[in-house]
Image (tube, rainbow over all chains, first blue to last red; front, side, top):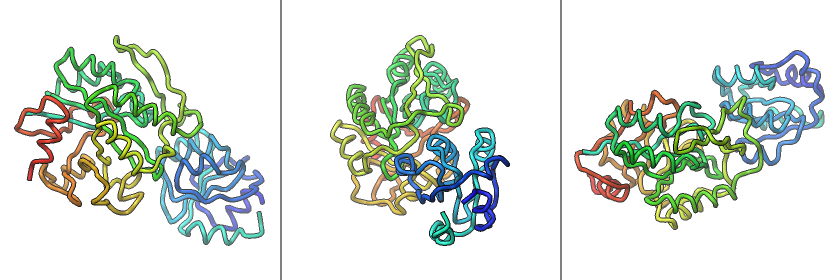
Length: 110
Length: 237
């Protein structure tokens, strides 16, 4: 499923995304709130759902080449995180819903 | 009278300013009249020896320390009386680091300094991440090496006991708990108070050179070393 479809289906708020990235094919989803766990397990080209909203998510997202980070539960990234994400071309979105609710909406579609 | 700050980062911590060399930190500490400081970098301690040397020149006691990130992503300060004990603990920390390189463009650089305050190396390993060791193991390994265990900024929104676990375990064997500096000042904490039985203290958690010296703890007694300081803190009511 293309990233732009996910953004639209889940009605995500956009914090940082390059137009070109919206055509990325998202292969799968991963839910993870411990950075060491995400570092070890998040698949490449996945949508990473997390409650974390700080700068370290940008580093991990880039290291592990995820398709995007979706910050859940209405948590908002600070300006430093958004600026870094834009600078490093890391796509970050947000939602007021929780990871389970959002993933269930994608069930069978990825 | 002892003025102390047991939570200071150097440029070895990716998130700290690159100008935080041991020499610069000790200069600032001297200006502020600090008598004892602990150097506590994230999962690292390569700038401790140089800091101790600069401390000796300026008459400031430098405590070998480290800020460990547990598996649960809680920050815990490990303070040692002896640099050898910290060095040994560092070997364990290094063995428990997840693989991965630090991306300096995002996280910042991790700089190592020599005794002339020159940069001699850059640490490439990702260090602002949880180790593969759970908190209780970290506590016992620090204590095994005669170190003191102080969970950092226990109420912080991230990387704290409260954010990660939701509670302070009265049986965890901590030596003290650290309240973040802004909260300490705002809520009027005093040495002698306790949370879940643990003495409270605070520290600057300096990540910027200008922060060093701006916030510190003070006790009327004279403590020449970490052991004496901790005993005084634990005795207070």
